[in-house]
Amino acid sequence: MAAQDTDPGVNFYTRKWVRPEDLNANGSLFGGSLLRWIDEEAAIYAILQLGNPHVVTKFISEINFEASARQGDLIEMGLVATEFGRTSLTMRAVVRNMINRRTILTIERIVFVNIGADGSPAPHGFNGITYDRDRMPVSLGG
Image 1: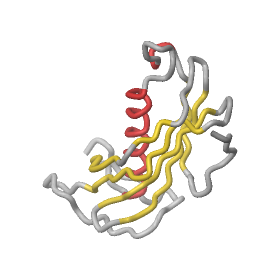
Image 2: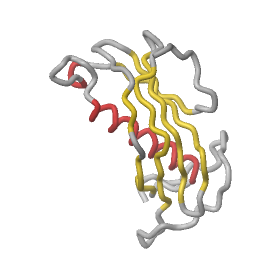
Image 3: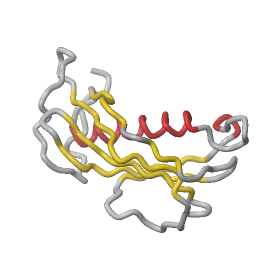
């Protein structure tokens, strides 16, 4: 797999340091840890894009593991919003190793649903991505 320096369109990056507790029995990054990190970052991204702290993961498409990471590697997770539904936000995820620039994982579709006060899907009222913090929820505890 060829190294990639950038992934066009990916606009939300989080970096993680692969630590001993993140490893599997083979000494490489445990896929479950990576998926937990992606789901958490995608939830944060959905909250910021939809302006609501109440969002849930609805769907994750096929997960394509292309390479791995070892203890001490630095990884970078990128997300990009690809579609705004009436009550949902769809995004794409890419994870790469910052040390060797190899793509570790891609997920073409992660769907989050905006949840209303009654716990049901609720329209979010947006149709595009924001780079402002205007959609930041007033209270994340409410």
